[in-house]
Amino acid sequence: MATEVMAQAEESRTNYLTNGHTVKSWLLTLDHKRIGLLYLFSISIFFAIGGIYAALIRLELITPQGDLMTAETYNRVFTMHGVMMIFFFLIPSIPATLGNFLLPLMLGTKDVAFPRLNLLSWYVFMVGAILMLITIMSGGVDTGWTFYPPYSSIYSNSQVTLAGVSIFITGFSSILTGLNFMVTIHTMRAPGLTWFRLPLFVWAHYATSLIQVLGTPVVAITVLALAFERTLQIGIFDPKLGGDPVLFQHMFWFYSHPAVYIMIIPSMGVISELIANMTRKKVFGYHFVAFSSLAIAVFGFLVWGHHMFTSSQSMYAGMVFSLITYAVAIPSAIKTFNWTATIFKGSVSYDTPMIYALAFIGLFTIGGMTGLFLAALGLDVHLHDTYFVVAHFHYVMVGGAIIGYLGGLHFWWPKMTGRMYPEVWGRISAAIVFLGFNLTFFPQFIVGYLGMPRRYHAYVPEYQVWHILSTAGASLLAIGFIMPVVYLAWSLKYGEKAGDNPWMAAGLEWETSSPPPTENFTYQPVINHDAYEFENVKEIKEAAAKEAALQTA
Image 1 (spheres, one colour):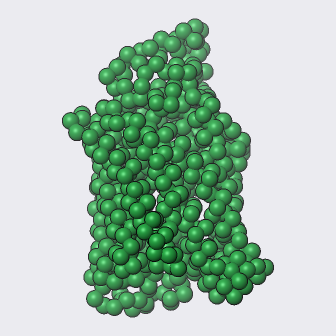
Image 2 (cartoon, rainbow, N blue to C red):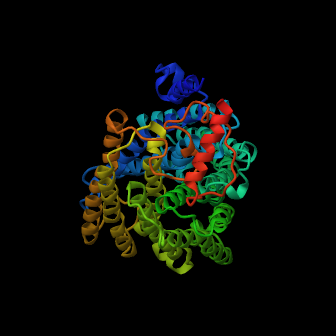
C-alpha cells in the first residue's frame, strides 16, 4: 500500500514538468506552478528586449555627439526601454512568477482561489504584450514611458494610441493577479496558519495585491483617456481642447508611484525569506516587518505629488508631499534595520541567494537615501529630470527589484525544477552583477548633479568620462545577467538532483517534494508553530512525516 502511494506521489510530483509535453497541456493548464513558469518564460523575453534597448542607449552615449542614432530614434529607444522594463518585466516579475509558484505552497493549499482566472491573467498579459510588440514593429513610441501630454496627445507621430491600449489591457492582468492572491490569502490558509504565522513573503504579496487592485484601474483609465483624446479629439488633457495636462500627471503618478512598490515590496518579501533562511534565525521584529509592508502600500498612495515639484503644483502642496515622502522612508528603514539585526550573530551561509540579499541591502539603501534628496523641494528643482533621477530610479528598481528577483529565483530554483545549479557560477555572476551595476549607475549620480539632463542623446564633452564609465559598467552588467540564463538552463538537464529541502530552510514549500506534485501536498498540512522556527525544524519535519504516514495508511 505504502509503495503504491509513493509511486503515485512520484508520478504526480513531476506532472507539471514532464507529464504531457504538448503545447496544449501548457496553454490550458490550471496549475499555478505551470502558470508561474509561463510568466517566467514570457517576462524573460521582454527583459531581453528591454536590455537590447538599454545597450543601444549606452552605445549612443559613449560619444558626446549623437552619431549612432538620430534624436527621434533615440527618443523611441529610451521610451521602449522604459515601457518594456516597467510594464512587462518589473511589475509582473516577482508576483506573477515566484508569487504564482510559491504562494499556494506557502499557504499549504492546492492552488490559488481562482485557477481559471489565474490562467486568464496570463492570457491577458500576453495580449497586451503582443500589442506592444506590434507597437515596436510599427515604429515604437517617442514620448517617454510617462506619455506626458500635450506632446503625446498632439504632436507625437508615433504609436501612442496602440501603446496606450496595450498598457490598458495589461493592467487587467495585474488586477486579476492581485485579486486572486488576496482571496487566496484570506480564505485558503492551512489549518493553524494564522496571520502572524505567515511567511513575510506572503505579507509582502498581500500588500502588493492591495496596490494592484486599487491603483491599476487609475493608470488604465488614464492611458485610455489619452488614447481617446488622440483619436476622438476629446478635451481631457490637451489645453487646446480645454483640457489640463497637469491632470494627466496627477492621475498617472497616483498609480505610478505606488507601482514602484508593486515592483519593490515583493522583492522585500523575498529578501526577508533569504535572510531568515540563510542565517537560520527568525526575522528580528517579525511584526514590524510585516506591518511595514502594509504601511508602504498605504503611504505609497499619498506621495504622488513629489513627481510634480516643478509643475504648476502649489508650494504648499509640495511641502505636504515632501513631508509624506520623508515619512514613507520609515517603513523601508525598519525593514533594512531588522534585516541587519537578523544577520547579526546569525549562522550566515554565503550561498548565491545570500549574496544577492546582501547586494539588495546595499543597493536599495543607496536608492532610498538618494530618494530623500529628491524629496527636498529645493534640491529637486536642481536635480529634476537629470541623470541623478535616472541613477536613483535604477538603484531602487534594478538594485532592488531585479536583485531581489534574481536572489529569489536562485533560492527557489531547486524547488521549481528539482535541480541544483552550479553554486560557484552563481556566486561569480552575483558578484559581477553587483560590480557592473555600481559602475553603470553610480557615475550617473555625479553627472546628474553636474547638470546632465536625462533623455538627451548629445551632450557637452565634459560629461563624456562619466558616460564611458557607465557604458563599461553596463557591459559588465550584461555579462552578469546572461550568465544565470546559461547555467540555469544547463542545470535543467545536467544539474545535480535537489532534495526536498536542499537549503534546510523553514517554510511549508520545503515540506513537499522538489518539484512539487500537481496538488502540492499528499496530505493536509497542519501548522502549530510560528514562521522561521529553525530551532525545532527537525521535530517539525518528523511530525509532518508522521502526519503524512497516518493520512496515507
